[in-house]
Amino acid sequence: MTCEEILQTVRGFCAREGLLEGRRKIALAVSGGADSMALLCLMRPLAEENGITLTVCHVNHGLRGETADRDEAFVREACARLGLPLRVFHAAELEAEVGRPQAGEDWARRLRYTAFAQLQGQGIDAIATAHTANDQAETLLLRLARGTGLHGAGGIRPRRGCYLRPLLCLSRAETEAVCRAAGQPWVTDETNDTDAYARNRLRHNALPALESTNAAAVQNLARFCEKAARADAY
Image (cartoon, rainbow, N blue to C red; front, side, top):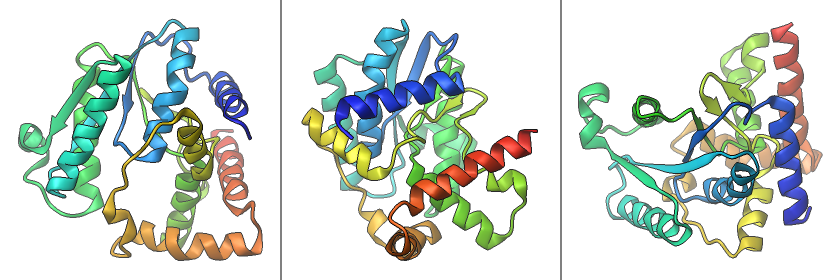
């Protein structure tokens, strides 16, 4: 798809799921990776069309030393260039709620959502995250492996309370295509390369194996989640 076609896909997905209805102030969760930079690129025209004010949120977990500071500086530069307000959170300022920094996905996730909760208390209507169809497929496989029912098989919902996932209709390859078309660079978190985390092992091994069987495996897994979520809601 072209960049305009991808934008149209996201526009249609947001309309179908009612993601932007009644929203006035949305914070974009931006890490600096390709998915979140694509979120930044795609949400700017959609926000303008819907009269929505955008801000950007970046969470520096403080676990990766200089590369984490590099990512923060990268996001700061991008927001300054685009004229978007930015709120940066550091682990130290949220220590009372989440404890001292520690390795592992659970603590990092709690840190991010604690930061998001603070934004809600400052007049933000919703927080948009950059989850894609690849994240959806990985989540489904993890839950199936660990044991889940119909509700869990529904995966990541497009909307959960104040949290919006407008890029669930896109693959990771498409978010990278958006960035390239816009001339928007991104940074890469080096922890994505390690197999220390279960999600990374699925990303590096299980999904490529499935895609070797069917190139549309990611899209089909994500589509299954949509069907399971509808059945669960019914």
